[in-house]
Image 1: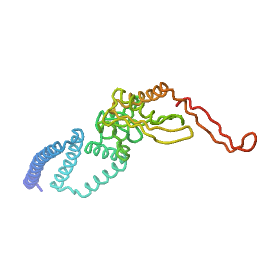
Image 2: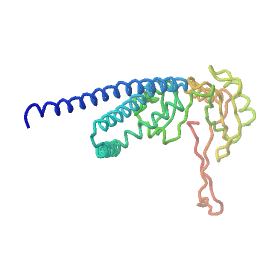
Image 3: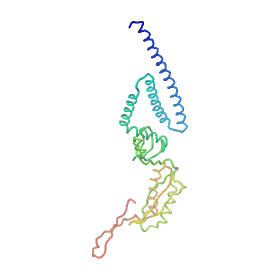
Image 4: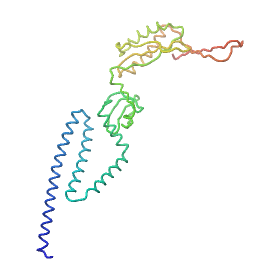
Length: 285
């Protein structure tokens, strides 16, 4: 075969390849514009649902990469490349990555749900996954909580989402639960009246709802009172400690005797006729 015969064949092949190349470029440009247009629509839809901007960015990046891979596979098919094995390879790679990163993907999914449902926000006081403190940061994989003793704790989102979440900052007030032990000779009605009067004067204790002081239980020492003032979450510990002080001061000023815990033993008295009882003062009550 001489040059005059090869040249027309080469021209035909080059022309065919050039046309396919131009077609692939056109498919890429059109596909890119369609992807960008679809991503803009998705971004508007996500923003209208008040979804976290960080989550929107991550989701759009994942969708963009996925669509571009599909576009590349389509272009390879346009060139006549067998894409079945290529798609199978991509699927195998995806499964391998998913298996290796299953923990990270679980945390990512939990982080996405936390940002969508928003059971808490930055600055809230929460208890989740065994950690209690103020939320400092909400990420896609982890949440940072500063505990009550000011220790920064990073918790995996999957643990938080799989556990019960207590948010102390959502409701306008919370209850402080304390008890007060009375001597069995003390008039509980008088003690209740004095405590209600004094506790209502503690700073940041709410008048509505009013503090609860009622009989909770009875033991060998006497009556046990439930002392329950209400306050805003940010004043919880101040009210907690101040209420304990008020209980101690009120009972001391009223001259109430120190409660005695009475222990009953199975033995008999010295004359062997009656069981005896021993009592010990509860000095810390």
